[in-house]
Image 1 (tube, rainbow, N blue to C red):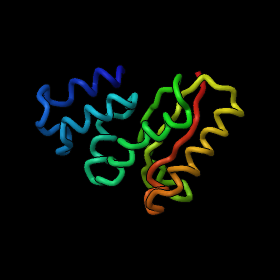
Image 2 (image 1 turned 90 degrees about the vertical axis):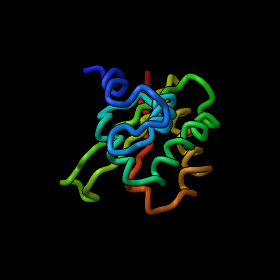
Image 3 (image 1 turned 180 degrees about the vertical axis):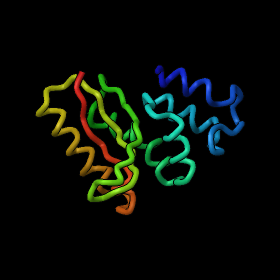
Length: 134
């Protein structure tokens, strides 16, 4: 199933209208500019219940670009892991890049130190940032 197509067809065509679960269409369009969205309806429903997560997701691409420069894309997915130790639902942001593994890991550590670890600690179990390679 083409998730991008699904995303485009599940939201209204005019900005300012509400999409799934009341998420503002303009906001969902901003997410779409930065992320390849998977499990679209679930992501939209989940974000509708947490404005702070949405703010983080809109800021993260700029912060990632500060350390990864060019040549990366972002994928956003929602996972439900009721059997995990932490349990519950969380978002996964994957930084898809073409760097050498060691360089990419250093960049992710820098992103964590300079921005991510300075965010509200209560959201750390709601979003995970990781690497994928082209």
